[in-house]
Length: 353
Image (cartoon, rainbow, N blue to C red; front, top):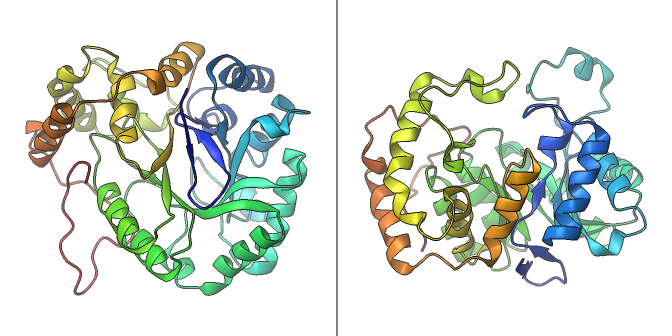
């Protein structure tokens, strides 16, 4: 495993991290706490994974409890990221929540300090390595209070690095761009980015290079909701509680057609590993957070870090394919958030800068 550091900090993380949403939420299959804890320990002890990304809303604190149990007495060996901003303490809202629907959001100073203290208690620690505001919207970006609160928490030593996660779903281009313009000392952004879904992640990275000198990215949905794992067929069916079951069949069929154009990436590694190496070719990516469902997948993805980098020719070929949507004609992607603003140059879809 190789490691990268958040610029301007002493926070160093594994190139392949572990997003705990697959262990705590049930959206990718059910895991007992014992199974989750054992997998977290194997990721660290056998494969060198040090970065574990949680959120208070994952199982209403379950992911944080799992991390505390997995690494009790070994806190210094791991880097813990978590996220706050949803009011998981609003009992009426939690009781009426359905599926993956969003809870009410709160980012005022008093709430953030309260939520962080709750996270610290569940994690059984006195500091959080990486704290991100969870799925912030434009009104949060333009409000200076939450970002001042994060700086305050950092000065107090309760957090070591801070930033924002953007979602749910893909999009949020100008939320991210404006945040970096307004808060140029931001440490990190979590976003969706992968070979098949390069927009708007690519222009977000370009904006960081212009406006936020120390902002690096931790990337989720690294495999396009499993498409880049290379195991789907036209006959693939998803479990009733699997979020992918609700996508149109065209998403599956067109995705498989796109993946078939990427065989040139798999001469020395699996497609799932190549998807991570493509992300890690960008120096502003500090860690990748693939969805991990089982031990076989954990070993495959963690093993990507030590494999040869993709060549310039391979990266250039991916960029050429992306420019033509991998030869597939389909309806334009539906994005969330603010994707246009007056006077802004048109953002292009492309590969690595």
